[in-house]
Each structure stands twice: as C-alpha cells, then as structure tokens.
Image (cartoon, rainbow, N blue to C red; front, side, top):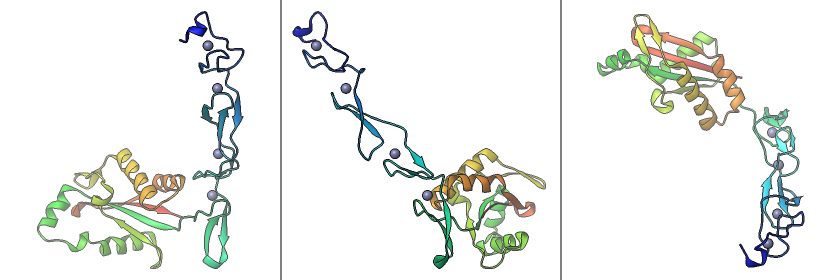
Length: 209
Ligand SMILES: [Zn+2]
Ligand SMILES: [Zn+2]
Ligand SMILES: [Zn+2]
Ligand SMILES: [Zn+2]
C-alpha cells in the first residue's frame, strides 16, 4: 500500500483510488465495447464478457454464430438447404453404419473368412434391410475409426456398453462429418441394430435425414 493512503484510500465511488491510483474490483464503470459482446471499465480498462444477443444462430452484436437456431431455406440451384443467416449447409440424409466385431468374428477373420466382413457386403445388407435406394449415401465406419467397444457375445445375443457407444457415435458424427449436434443426437437415439451372431458382427445403424 502506498504511504499516501496509509489511513485508507479515497475511493469516492470508483474502482480507482483518487489519491494513489490503486484499483479495486468493484465500482467499475462498465461501458459496452462497440461490435463486441464485452464491456470495458472506462476508468481502469478491465474487460468482461456479457451474454450474446442471439438472433437465431447469430449474435446481433458481435457476429458470433452458434450451431442452433438456424433458418433453413432451400437453395434451388444447388438443391440443398442452407441457413439464410449464417450460410451453413444442412446435412444431407445419409445412413451411418458403425461397425463392431466380437472376439468370435476376429477369430474367424484370422482363418480367412473375409467376404462377410467387407464394406461392400455390409452396405448391400444395410440397403436391403432398410429399403435404401442405390443413390442413398451409406457411410461404413469400421471399428478402428470410431474406436467402438467390442460387443460381448452370449449365444445369439450381444451386449455392448451403450452409453459409451452413443458418446463415441456423437463425437464421430459431429467431428468427422460436421453434423449438427442435435441432429446427430436425434439420429443416435433412433439407431437400429443389425446383427449376425454366428459371424460375430454387429452393425449400429444411424440414419440422419
Ligand atoms: Zn489510495
Ligand atoms: Zn474499473
Ligand atoms: Zn455476441
Ligand atoms: Zn445459421
């Protein structure tokens, strides 16, 4: 403490002592910073952030965007939906197949039975099962890419750590395919399973539209 203020500062309803210039963290005089969601103290220069002023997906004040509140409109010339506020493209419909194999399958693979475990086989079965046309995109995501856990096989049924699976699926869809988190979540909640127990194969099918 400065000797000048040995017997107390002279704050005078301010964040800065009139006599010695010491700053305290109260009585700031907040002023809005132009074009930012920040306020700045006009006396000491301290800044703090304030809540954005969202208009849908975009902040009216600072221009920051969030991945919600988009306003989708169809762009006829490109035949896809885009947000009229921020320009983000709406995700196309697609099927995402998260593939995972049990220990049985891994054992069979080492004996060379590979045709059932191919991407082509999986996609053709998924198309047939869900009645998907040939131009409907089906993304095959092998276990090593999404890091899915191995299912435990008990006779004709599988058990798998579903909360972990869902968390990994969400992460993958959002990070690798840039899918809106809410859309991805909705798809995951409605995911359907295809399984071939005697081959130790489990396909977790997430359809987004
Ligand atoms: Zn002072
Ligand atoms: Zn201040
Ligand atoms: Zn803002
Ligand atoms: Zn938007």
